[in-house]
Image (tube, rainbow, N blue to C red; front, side):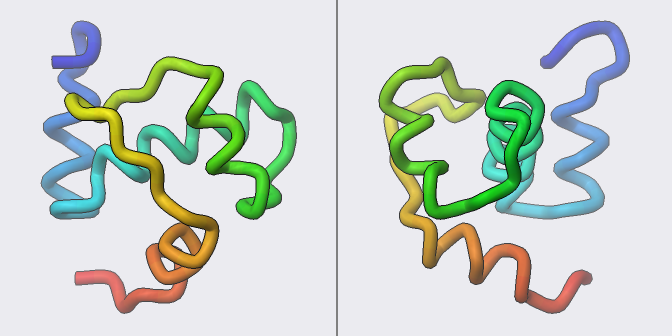
Length: 71
């Protein structure tokens, strides 16, 4: 559970199985002050992630996330 508002559960209900990736990308965009996904894999090595396991997504995986049809 992330904070009082159960943000992880709410986003999971909207985004689905990629909710953790969504949260990590949101944090990346805020911290890096940039939305260039090609730098996301580098960011994951130096910052804490919402993921339970250490799993680095490639920039192509991130691009696929943004291109997918929403439920």
